[in-house]
Length: 234
Image 1 (tube, one colour):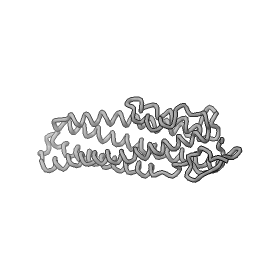
Image 2: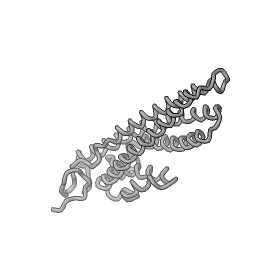
Image 3: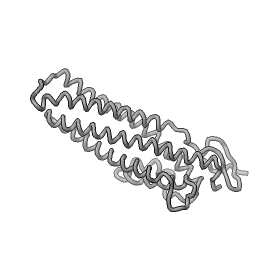
Image 4: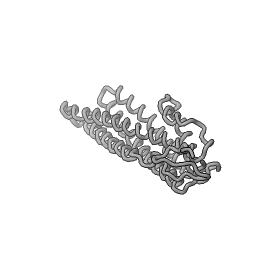
């Protein structure tokens, strides 16, 4: 008897039709860290609202410019941006690790159904422009392999995948536009407008993060249920 190539936490051995161990990555802190990203997005919304509130009087001419208040508002914007980068790097790292593990599990659940090798589950996220569609294709293949009928036409969770991916791509593109607009803003009116864009982008990012959490939980539950049920082709 030789160990089977299952990326599982505990050793398993080849059986005629099943391998019932739990898939690796079935328990991951990715949802928790994505929750941290949502919290930081809320801080960005609060900082942007504060900046807009401060500048509203300046733009309309009904208030005076207070340098101390302006400095506090600017620090809040900069600080929330730094926190967001840190939270995103931490959450993104663990998400990619989870994504690679579920891709490995998919090879065990339904060999031959994956169009890209497991390495693409990591590398695809670092390819400019291509990162906007290649990981989605990998996720669709993994989702299909994790379902009850890997060779069927459809798969459960496809709607959630499409919703998450669409929200994420839109949030990324809008955030880049909002950030560049804010960085280029010079006068009070331009900064007031740009802060509104940043606040809107944070809301879009929260929606994408919530959908990402739901997708992670859905796919993890599907793989866990399939492994427990023993529906794995050796």
